Amino acid sequence: MYIGLWSRLADFERDSLTRALERRAVIQATLMRSTIHLVSAADFWPFAAGTREARWESWQRAYRKRGPTPATARAAARRIDRMLAGGPRSRAELVEGIDSALLGWASTRLNLVRIPPSGTWERRRADLYARAEDWLGPAPDISEDEGIDLLIRRYLRAFGPASPADVASWAGLPLTPAKAALERMELRQFRDEKGGLLLDLPRAPLPAADTVAPARLLPTWDATLLVNCRRTQILPEEHRPKIFHVKNPQSEMTFLVDGAVAGTWKQDGKRVRLHPFGRLRRSDRDELEAEAARLADYIAN
Image (cartoon, rainbow, N blue to C red):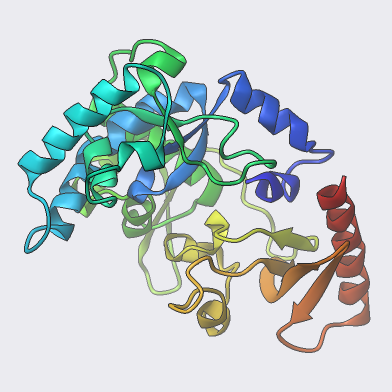
């Protein structure tokens, strides 16, 4: 997340994010698609309300023919809640004596956040948990529909225009409630090359087709590369198997040329080395090398 923000914000400093996490202005938590996300404190509660039941249903489908039952998950949630009542606990403490995967299912019955110093630049693994009510204060009265509406607006602001299916996939929602939310919102409508419906926020910017995109270096699991953001065309389909494959669950760190993935990068001591998928123009190579040097300096300092 540090490199992800560095790639997007001018003059971004690592300590600014660490301070935001420590001051509880920014929150790490398991939310959409039951994966870890970094969100503002203001967005945490709506996102939690909007995704909770979808996450619960997803875990039920995963364990339908094997493993723990819903009753077991609820019992585990009560146990975890009692443990956290005494203060933050590590993942190792919370899963002691239970199936470790059960933590994810049980957490849908709770409001859990991952707190510093875990999940920071200095201590990467986000494995220290607290109850959101203790970390942020009591939960506000937010309905599931209100949470879903805000979730969709945040998605479209970042990735629109997008299809209803992509919206649902990114949010980890079934298509039916996602479509219902889209229908009650005032949105712009477009059509893709095949006539499919695309939706976006009113007055959202649409850069001209000839807008030049600068060189960028992205971290692993960057949101723009996921399947549900395919409409961005940032990751050409021919390169997708090189970035996401079963032998490399953490994906790859990538670089962009004119807004599309054109290779990967790796840290090599004090340097950042580029590994292009094909021949690069000299101007693109020079711009990437300058960006790589800037990233190497950021990582080192």
